[in-house]
Image (cartoon, one colour):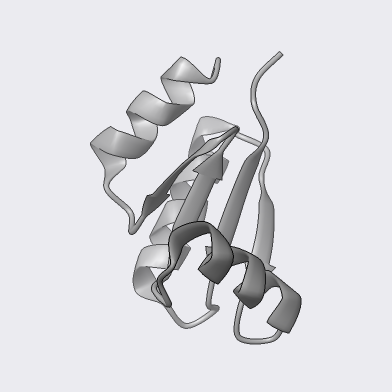
Length: 81
């Protein structure tokens, strides 16, 4: 079974939009949190990363800040996607 995937993002962030489109194209199910509208999601993201930067893509227990396609592809492959 593949690991869960979560994306912390903002609706106007172009890198966030690209990251979610990439996951959709690959057929990877994910949970998306708008950190601008959801204070609890912002707090969880900040606690995880110590940063106020989006997107944050979490795959299982690993995360990456920003949308670096090769890094995300490697995380997804390691997680069974």
